[in-house]
Image 1 (cartoon, rainbow, N blue to C red):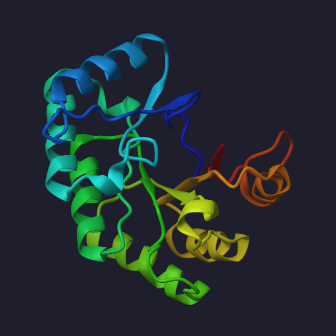
Image 2 (cartoon, rainbow, N blue to C red):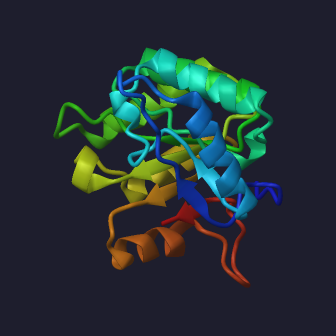
Length: 202
């Protein structure tokens, strides 16, 4: 079902500042996020530009806690939570949902290549079931140049059929307009057409 209060507009890929000892710098991170929000941007924290996969799960959990404690509105955030480990993905995702984040940006399991579509489907299915929260809004992260493992229209169709309330959209970082258009034509709401509630960010 379409939800009017979903996150909209520009979501800035937030950089993660690091200290000289290579630990995250929360104060600079918070200041940067506050500035982005002041420019009417949403916050895509812990994505590719955030070097999320250079951070431990605990560092990501702590940084999100610190952002929220500093008064940055969770409804402006779409943190990246996708990991190769289902357990870590569930932990990060549940944490974001409990904070009231607008959604989560979720990579497919990306280390082992040539994963079948069925395998990717089962991964997302398992995450949805383990999180078990009706507030969950997943935005599938399609970035084939980095992850290699991609998101296909058939996969989206299956996930929407099984978990329409939890699969909210996708971020297409393929850099291929024809690919983006395929998803828009197949799933996104269009004037005069069906309202699917599946949003496509680029």
